[in-house]
Length: 162
Image 1 (tube, rainbow, N blue to C red):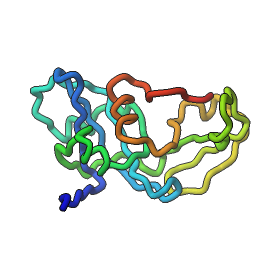
Image 2 (cartoon, one colour):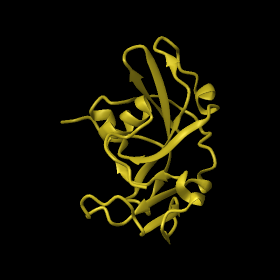
Image 3 (cartoon, rainbow, N blue to C red):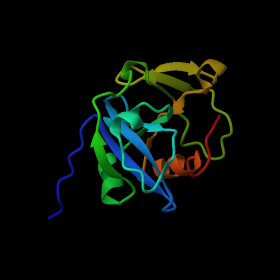
Image 4 (tube, rainbow, N blue to C red):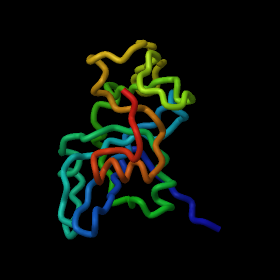
């Protein structure tokens, strides 16, 4: 029987990069408005592979992006591993995402049906994307390999609609 994976808000995880560096992210919230998925904040700084993690130093870094994911899948797939916990999860009330609703339309290059929301709040339809919201992270629930790609390369695998 597989061992039960327990994650808690505040947990910090490591993603190793080419056996030379490592970067970290923290589990900061659950978003009931997006499949009750885990919300993470990934940090910008890249550390040497031999660096011993200091949780206070990690959470003091700038946030590179926020995302929804399934933490247990990444642990089971050895995409990331838990290194510690820190109670400082930032200002989770101000985390906002964007998403469009025509994902089923093939070869679409522009959406006029965008939504934005704060975690655990109702979606707000804004129609066409505006500069006011363009900086927000896309609110999909990403699989572990997509989160790993974004942490390692700065981009998700595949195409992102504007």
